[in-house]
Image (tube, rainbow, N blue to C red; front, side, top):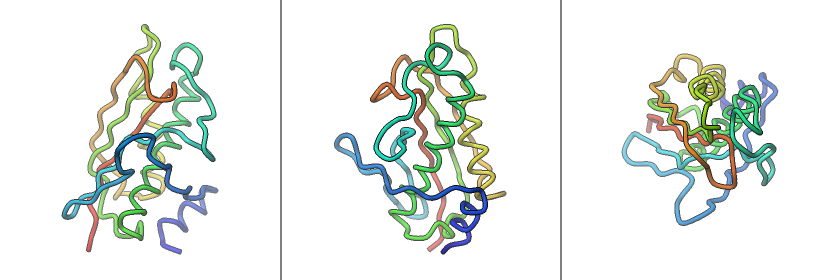
Length: 154
């Protein structure tokens, strides 16, 4: 077990299987020293636990938790390409999309769910730049979607 997966276990988390693509793309692609993930939905065992717009059907607190699920799914996608999460040098960038009710403006707080999970799991290697974007709708009516870019060794 890698040190990163041991840390996940300490946090009571398990790295899930890679979420299969919903269309014509790969869950993650490596080019040189970087791995880019596709947008990861908050899939848990094949379904999204809560759907709808944040600030309407979905509370900001629920969405923040789901953003953490997205980040966990993104780590699984990275592992599928590099084989060992200990190869992560650092998380470079996180981009998050929040399906938002028209008057909802708390996208950064929602995306903290992903950022905080990456920090808890990876420590300093998890510190990153980030964009948090409000959108009208996401695939499968997901409240949040997260993609990450990581630098890897070897």
